[in-house]
Picture 1: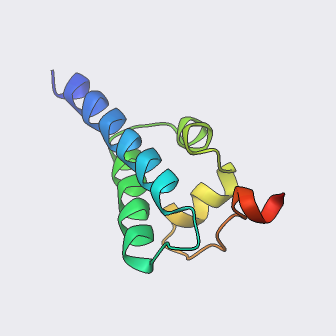
Picture 2: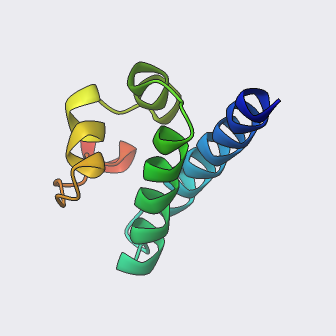
Length: 84
C-alpha cells in the first residue's frame, strides 16, 4: 500500500512540477517560483518517478533534470518567444 501511495504522490508532485514549469517559463519568472519547481522535481523523483518521465513531462532534457536533482542551478532553457 505504501508503494502505491508513493507512486500516486510522486505523480501528483510531477504534475505540480509541470504546472510550475509552464507558469514560470516567461520573462516574469522569479527565483522563488523556480526554486519551488525544482523542489517539486526533486520530491517527485524521491517518490519514485523515473527520470525519463520527469524529462518528458516537463519537456526538458534528462541531463537538465539530473542537474536539478544534483542541486546545481542549470541555465534555464530558452522560452518559446526567444526560440522564435
